[in-house]
Image (cartoon, rainbow, N blue to C red; front, side, top):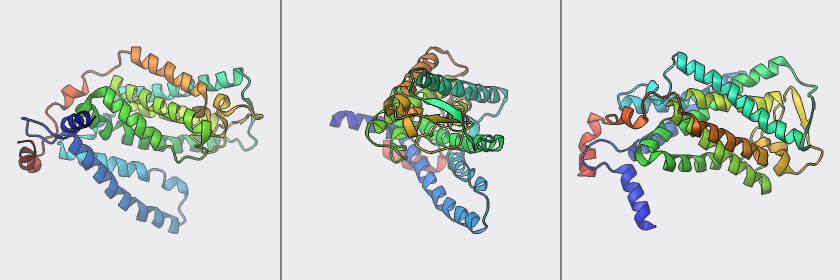
Amino acid sequence: MGAIVKAFLTTLFFDRGHHRLRNGWWVLIFIAFIAVTRVIHRPIVDALKQLDAHEAWREPLPVLCALLATWACVRLRRQSLASVGFKLDRRWVKEFAGGIVIGMATLLTAAAMIWATGNVRFELDPQRSVAAMMYGVYVFFFAAMLEEILFRGFLFQRLLDGIGAWGTQIALAALFAAAHWSNPGMEGATRVWATIDISLAAVFLGLAYLRTRSLALPIGLHLGWNWAQGHLLGFGVSGFDHNGWLRPVFDGQTTWLSGGEFGPEASVFGVLTDLILIGLLWKWRGSATAPVAALERDAGSVPALQGADRRATG
């Protein structure tokens, strides 16, 4: 085991012969920039609260911080945000819109299976409104942006270039699941099924990036799934309550079949739909024109750091 760990760390951090900064160091640099933006984020939020600004003004701030950290890293690598999946062209818009539709369809499939097996029924939510649903799009757009930048953006791509697709998918699936362990309702059977589902969600979102080399499809999938789950059907979204157009009624059904208050992500049917989507993405040849390894092969050299890098790899 010690030899395996040593080989892993050597592959990730040390580049023998090319005299460039290895991907493992870029991962640490990105984490450091994220830590800096967190320091900036807190006083801005406090200032907005003191000004009694609407909560809507705070929603974009974490995304802007994550984008700032990403931008700082890609600028050091003499690249642009397009290199991490933000090439905002017609294909990006098309894949983003398609992701929303597919994400909604996937969630509705899971909900339909829960309903068809008698584990939930729906009634109109008396507090429903078009305004609430549109605000839900706004909130979940920034939530999807944030999580995809953090989990399928620069960090994912540096690991991909360093340890390959399998290692990256496993590592980020574990990290994505761990990031949700403190969510409301994460206990007992819910913790087990939700962890499996969230891990598989990370895999299909990772596949969406791998097949397109863009963040458009992952962001769209994430947004479509969460919005349909919370603001259309009224389920909990990873344990957080939302007012939807409909309201699910469980009548005491088993949580691992219904998802319960946590949402369909804690049900066996959520896991099943994840597996279906993974299978479809696996079979899809994708829209990427070139693999990331080819696009990034010559990237990552920073003149100011090359001397130190030579000494580290010498």
